Structure formats: structure tokens, C-alpha cells
Length: 334
Length: 274
Image 1: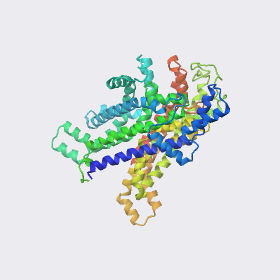
Image 2 (image 1 turned 120 degrees about the vertical axis):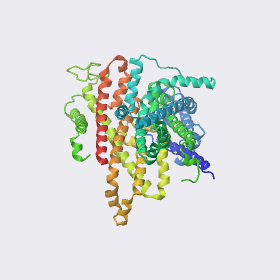
Image 3 (image 1 turned 45 degrees about the vertical axis):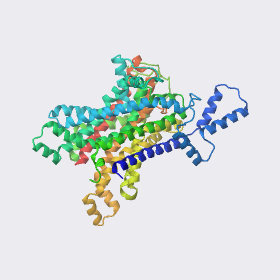
Image 4 (image 1 turned 180 degrees about the vertical axis):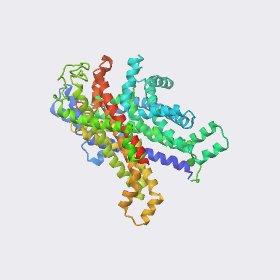
């Protein structure tokens, strides 16, 4: 088999594995709750003041238990849960009953993936380019100063920075945040344009902060590569600065790309918080609504879709990995 | 850098004293100087700016910030430290499993990679949100370590597997040194540095995660932490009403602590590298 094909199959299997492990975790936390989501729904429906007889309540309880797949032995529950979630059936939302969780989440997911991919790619490109430049530049003072700023920012929690940026954006600069719901039923380019417009304030917030981690990692790496023999050799051949730049960048590229692939899940945390603070209609915002409404089913659906979203984004970037790493493209030269 | 240089380094001494001082402050102040339980709402007049009677001011929820801040900081630090302790322990165990037992190594490595790509926030929020009535503050740290171990164990595994192939380890092995002695004498001096760095980073991560989860409103909201304090300030519009002391003072305490901790981390790293 061609190594490239084998690589793609391997990555696809890992993609499936990620979703399976994620689903198992979601299943465990859904069954390990100190209360029962189905009972919660029954109580909530009863609290609306509907007048039902005891038998009717019992019948409703049984229907809802069936809906949630409760009452069966645990392995059958697990199997049913897997089948339901994989086919996109995540049960009804408790707060927006009887709206399906899958419908609510499906609207928000594209917004999150758009922001996540944009933010991670932009911060990654800026951070890495700046890192190589700082490592190779002759203006040591400037690159040192940037490094100290980036280092000083590392211990500050992202949540604190995000709040501070929100205050700067709204209170000091007096700019307004775009509001409104999710656009539906419009042509694709219109939705994309809306996503772009909506994502500008949260995106700038993430980019201003996010490049620094990449910058520090890249600078360290480039400093190491700069002293390697092959770069010494290129220098001795009298190559201009931009050729050396290319050599260093190309060699530091692969490990940094691996880091980008693995860090999407981590990036999701900051993304979700920023979405909620800047009222960007993605999964983070939806998650906040579900917490306020104690909507457990919606929360589980969001957790699952976040795992699927990040796994999909990782898989798509994984497919571009052979373009970056020639060791996968050219077989048998390990 | 020798040990003497380290303890003479001015930056190191200042940061160490800030960290120790703040830690002592969060323990001693609530124990001896607080008269009213700071978790109780509406025990003081609302929204008073800093003045001699209330040096840090009071909140719109009627809490005295001078009493609230040390307790909040202590709870946040407890969460961070518990996270770091348990996550580091798990990370060491998993990475040892991945390197020392060769048959398992691919499987464990794949598992670590998968756990790195799974977004931690939703899982942690659901767990803490559903269990928050039944758990204490340190348990939240334990919950955070469910996902916290993945990144450090990835780094530790690569260090361990490169260590395993080094010549001096083989020499020790061929000299007949027992396994525990190889681990203690040959591995540990190298590993200590990384374990320490990861420990501090995990503390920072735990505190950051706590703040994020609190801002979502999924923490034990009546227990003061830095995150919940910020949450209530946000809910009560302190940012728009100009109650700067409510959010700024807790944040400054937190940042002072974290920056000092990070500086210690870098200095000790410099020392352990040599």
C-alpha cells in the first residue's frame, strides 16, 4: 500500500477513535450525574402547572425514560447511546422542549468551527513568522523586548485578559459589538460574510493574545536550528539572509505544525469563553445559555459536538500534513 | 547557575517572598482577622469604594472585599495546586507506562494524543456543574485533572523515551544497577526539571480553568474564588457602574501571585538546567 494512503487511513481511524473515546466520556458523565436528567425534565414539565392525573404522569415518565434510553441494563444503554449520538439524535433539549438538541447545536457549530480555524491559523502564522524573525534578526534589543512581553503575558489567565479586552473594547474605545441571532435560510456566501463580520471582535481578541505562545515556542526552536551544522554551511556559502530564513523556517515548520494540530482542543476553551463574552453565536454562547437553564441534555450535546468539531478540524488539517512533512510523501526514506 | 547564585538572585528572592507572603496572608488573615463570614451576602453596606474602614471597598452583594479577597485567592490556589499535584502524578504514571512497557507504547501514545485533542472545557463544566452541590473546593482540582494530565504526559513521554536510549543508562543497566536505582539516580536529575516546570504550568492552567468555568457560571457560585468574584462583578454590572475595586483588586492579587510563581519557575528552571 502506498504510504500516503496508509497515512490517511491511519488518521481517519484516529479520528473515529477520538469520537468514540469522546462519546464514551460523555456517556460516563451523563450516567454519573448525581441526579437524573429525565426526572429533571418530568419535574420541569409538572412545574409548568399542567393538570395531569397520576396515571398520565406515570405514562409521561415512562415515555421520557424511553426517550433518554434509561431503564435498560448499562451496556445496552451504552450501545443505544452510541447509536443515537452517532446518528445525530441527542434527545430533546430540556429548556427548549421539545426542540431537538441536534437542531440547536447544528446551527451554532459552523460559527464555532469558523472562529476556531480562523483564530488558530492566524495566531499560528503570526506567531511563527515573528518567532523566526526574532531569532534571526540582528536587532537583538527589539526581539528581546518582544520576548519579555510575551513571557510576561504567559502566567496571566486568558479569562482575565479576555475581560480586560472586553472592557477596553466597549468602555474605553466605545466600540459596539455586533449582535443578533444566527442567520438562517440565506445563500452560503451571505452566511459566510455574516460569520466574518460577527467574528471580527472576538477574533482580534484571540489574535492579540494567542500569537505569543507560538512566538515563544518558535523562537526557542529557531535558536536551536540556527546553530545546526547545515545552517552554518549555508552561511559559509555566503547565502543572503532571506535564504537562511527560509531554511530555518522550513525545518522548524514540522514540529510547529504538529503542535497546531494537537492544540485545537485547548484553543476551544479560550474560544468558548470569548464567544460568550462577545456574544458570538457559537457553541460557547450556547453553552452559557444551557448552563443558565440547567439544560443538561443540551450541555451533553454541546460537549459531544465540540469533540466532533475539534476532531473534524484536526482531521482536515491532518490531511494537509503530507504537504508539510516530506517524510510522509516520499516512502521508504526513513 | 549554582544554588548559591539562585538564593542570592534578587528577582528570585522577591518573587519567592511574594508567593510565600501571599500564601501566608490567605491562610492567616481569614483565620484571625475576619469577623464576619465573607461568603455571606448583605452583611456590609453595598458598593463602598476603598476607605479607611473598608480598605478594599465592599461589593454590591454586600461583602467586605478585604475579607473576601484572601478567601477567594486561597480557594483558587487550592484548586490550582490540587490540579497540579494529581495531574503531575497521573502524567508521570502514564508516561512511565508508555516508555517502560514497550508493548503498550503505541497504544498509550495514541491514547495520549487523542486526549490532547479532546476539548476539556465542556466535559469539565458538565462535571462541575452537576456535582457542585456535593463537592468541596479541592475536589474541583481533582476534577480538573481528569483532562489536565494529557499535555504534560505527552512531553514527559518524549523526554523519557529519549532518556531510555542514552548511553549512560545502558552503562548503568549493564553494570547491574537495579531498575529503581536507575530511575532514582540516572533519570530523576533530568526529570526533576521537567516535572517542576509542568507542575507550575499545571497550577497556572488549573487557576485559569477555574476562572473560565466560573465566568460561565458553572462553579460553586456561592464559594468565593477569584473566578466567582469576577462572575458576580460581571453579573452586577460592576464594569459599567465603575466599581473598579470589585474586579481590579482580586485580579491584581491573582496576577501578582501568578507572575511571581512563573518567575520562580523560570529561575529554578535555569538552576536545574545546569
